[in-house]
Image (cartoon, rainbow, N blue to C red; front, top):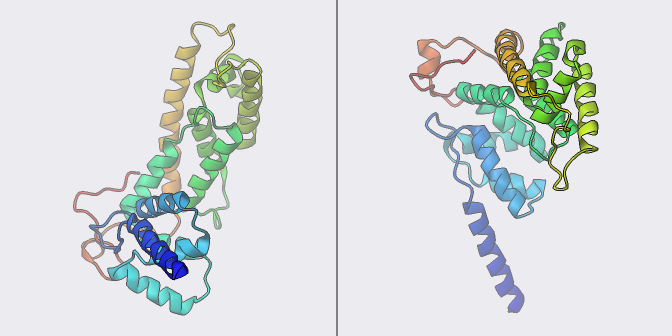
Length: 266
């Protein structure tokens, strides 16, 4: 009797936990799939769900076209792992505006105060790979230039300023160069960090270092925009088409209705 009662309580609590995840139906008026998955993943983290539980619970919050897609996917791939299922869900319901959001996210990535440079670099790479597919790209120079600019723009200001003072930026031509320079400055700064662990510039910093960093930042931001515009025409993940009246207003199971005033932000 006690065991049965405990099972009932557990089931009720699990139901409440799942209800913290909003429904997703895949329609154009619904939230973007990346946003919905982020919210669902946050709930899963709180409750320590493993991948099998996440797939089961997330699927229970699908409805409409999204639920239909899941049913068809389950028939075709009955034992599919969560990671593959999640990626397929993202690819199927990806919206043009969602893509724009990911581009803006990549462009504006910044290193957090207590985030090591290596972790920041990993974040840049993973965000880039979610947007672009380099499988058929024989010229990776644009990618290299873009990631260099994003890294140099987004690293912590003390690291960037030290790179300017040490005249390292002139020697940076590849992503490896940028990574090595950033890691070297990070190591130097950690040796002089304050007791609370916050990176600060050494006392020998010149008074015009902020102006130098700000000028460099403005130049990098302009270059990032130019490089992204080139990449947008080469290797987006998935198919990129110019919108027509038919594609904009088609609301079939494999299409998403675009808001009337939405624009590609190239």
